[in-house]
Image 1 (cartoon, rainbow, N blue to C red):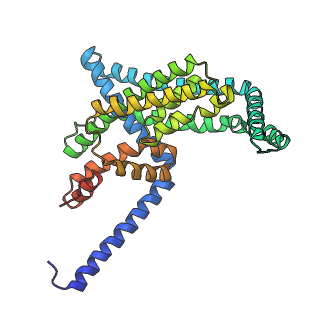
Image 2: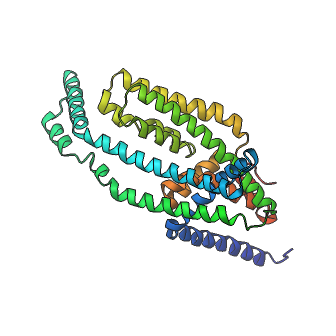
Length: 339
């Protein structure tokens, strides 16, 4: 124990400053290496699911290791390829009717302008119509090919990482470190439950959207499946995402509000009533921690960071809980103030 107070405060201040500097250096490292780290982290998380699938096939169907691994890898490749091809086809179909949707938007805007005019509010309809006709509303879709190339390259990198992980696991001794075992077990349970909940959300959303013959119904259902992995704001974005297309297709009629209401009810029931029953305590993270980490990882890694925020933060928390000096930080992340 230090008896010299100035020395004690100096050391404490130095430790805080060094911690801040180290956090800044780590954040900068994450930002500048994200093109490689994002596929690497995604491949690790997918590996935890594929490893469980491989073990299930080995024990349930008595498949040899090489066959179970091959089937798992082929399923993963098929899933990625199917999603990419399906997305391209859906966007192409939407683009064929782009001018029709643009005209629907102009007609709806003119109708709103006429209604406002009845209440003494005058809008320049000619200006609005000219602006909407020149608005590059669908131009970003025409640049989708360039974005697709980046998605394909990242997907290829993820698959390569997973292949190395799967075949490398045969030569790797079993994991005995309790922190790593707990981390992998928690992440595996979280991802498995999230996967099932997201799949159910996507299927119900697809039934609703196809039932009302919404354009890009399958693509929006796919987005609802994916966005369900983003905590808190993902469900809100998933519900509001089809709103522009619904507005172009139905205007502000009853079908618009019925579809939005059904999608919101689906997200609420599955995300707040069904999923917590299977997830239990989940990742033992306080809601404020989840939101803060969502913001941090989104700023650092963009949209992929939003998807990965909870598993990464939970893994860091487990590691911190196993170290004596950082255990109070882990308790703080869980919402329990250290004594």
